[in-house]
Image 1 (cartoon, rainbow, N blue to C red):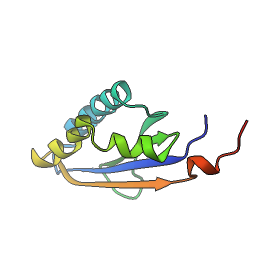
Image 2: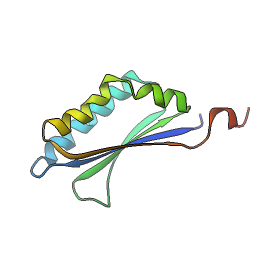
Image 3: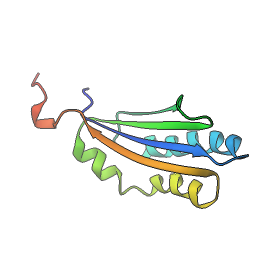
Image 4: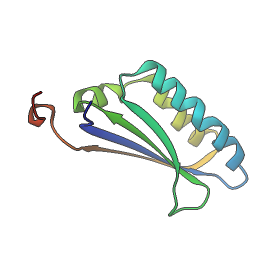
Length: 105
């Protein structure tokens, strides 16, 4: 299956809250994997920023990725910000290939 779109969420832990963020991120990712049509999700350390992570979602189409932005599970990231666990949450999305441009098999 080809990946046509990627979304990322950069999460910086608030001072003194690294362990809580580290514990919360996998829970959010599991909920997203269980309730969306993503190809996969990954959590990696943000090597450019200390005590920060990048959560990446991979999609077979831009439309599936965009539909996912309405999912309540994404609220988990904002909850971390609102509760003071995270000092910054930044959302990004990228279209790698439009579905109509993918090679036919």
